Length: 166
Image: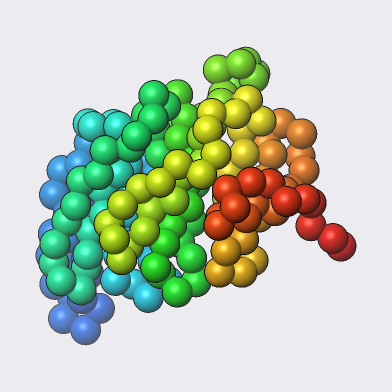
């Protein structure tokens, strides 16, 4: 499933063959993620790239939350296993890494589905860290794109606590 071309997101009922519009024109939505419980869809669009869009699929509501950062593109959206929160990074542009390491900096954020808020966890870093796995309720494994190394990030303490052990 992909709606990067800007045409929208559609649902196909496999029993009836009927197609219905789930999300109309969004511009180009480069990053999107369904929550594990399928109650939420989060995405970022080039139409208003300094906002994170959260659709509550169960209730049929949507929220548009301003990303509190100078870096405007949300990328690498990673929901927690219980769907209560989502880690993501912000960048200067879409998730396109070029050879200029100075242009590819990232900040780490946490979206809380219960409070509908966004909190910055790690300010802009030239390491280009992004979330790859929730390893516990309060710890996320981050990957460093340029140095090809993983780190453990403690969400409660808001800091890197080490590297994973093999």
